[in-house]
Length: 381
Ligand SMILES: Nc1nc2c(ncn2[C@@H]2O[C@H](COP(=O)(O)OP(=O)(O)OP(=O)(O)O)[C@@H](O)[C@H]2O)c(=O)[nH]1
Ligand SMILES: [Mg+2]
Image (tube, rainbow, N blue to C red; front, side):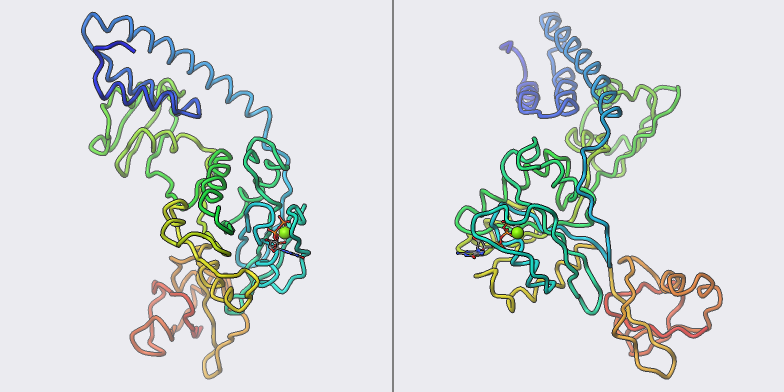
C-alpha cells in the first residue's frame, strides 16, 4: 500500500480484503477509488483501481450468466400447509426432533448420535386453534452452505419457509449460533434484518438518475461508479433511508432472502444476553428441551414470526366460533377479513362489531378498522 494514502482509503482497502462476494469487493474498490489521492503521485494507484474494477465488472457479468444457466440447487421442497411454515434448524443432535414432537404431538425418532433425522420431518403446531407447520431439517454443520451434509438441499427448504427457528444446546451454544448464522448468510438467508429501502430500476438508456441524494452516506460519484460497474449504467435509483455501501450491496443482490427468526437454547447454554448478542435477535433459554410443559410458552412467539394475526368470527346473536380462527396479515383491516369470508361481502357490509382491541366490547367499527390478534368480529351483511 502506498504510504501517502488517507485513513479512509486504508479502511476501504481493509473492506476490500475482507469482502466475500464480487459485489462487496466492487463496493470496496469504488470506495477506495473515491478516497485515492488526487495528486499526480496517485495516478498509478487510480489506474490500478480502475483496472481491478473493470476486471471485477466482467467477472460479475460472467457469473450472472452462469447463474441463470445453472438455476437453483436441487431442493427437498416441503409443501406448505396451515397458517405458515417454520423450519427448525440446528446442529446434529441439538434437540430439533424433541422440540418438534413436543409442539406437534408427532413421534419423530430421536437419538443421541446426530443425523437421526435425514429428511425434513414435519408436524402441525396448534396455536389458539390455528395450525402452524413446523419442519425439522436434517442437521447443519460447518460447511453445509458449501455442500457438506447435503447442506444446499437442506438449506433450500429454509429459503422457501416463512420463518426460522434455530436450536442450540450446551456450553458451545454461542459458537454454534455464529456458525449457523454464517452458514445461512453464505446461503444468502439473512435473519431479522430489514430489506433495504433502496430501489434500482433498470432503464434502456438515459444514464443514472438518483432520487433521495440526501440519504447517501457516500459521494454521489462513488454511488454512480458502483452502479455502472455492477451493470446498472442506465437506471433510476431511489433511496428511502440512509444508504451505506453495505446496504447498497444487499439491495442489488436479489437472491438474498430476509427471514424472521427465533433462537432456542437449552442445556447448560450461556446466558440469554450473550446469545442475543451472537444471534442479533430474540432468544429463549430452557433448562431442558425434554420438559414439554416449559416449551408450551414457545407457541405464541413462534406464531408471531409469521407476521400474521388470528381473528375469530361470530354471527349476530351467537357465540363466536373459537374452533376455526381466520388467519390475516398483521396490517389487515375489516374489509380484508370480509373479502376472505366471501368475495362480495366487503361490498354489502351493514355493520361490524369487534370484541378485543376496541375501547368497548362489541364496539361498532368502520370497514377500514385495523384488526388485532385474537379479536372477535361480528359481521352483519
Ligand atoms: N442418551 C440418550 N440421549 C438421547 C436419546 N435420544 C435423544 N437424546 C439426546 O437428546 C437430544 C435431542 O435429540 P434429538 O431431538 O433427536 O435431536 P435432533 O436435533 O433431532 O437430532 P438429529 O435429527 O439426529 O440431528 C440430543 O442431545 C440427544 O443426544 C437417547 O435415546 N439416549
Ligand atoms: Mg432429529
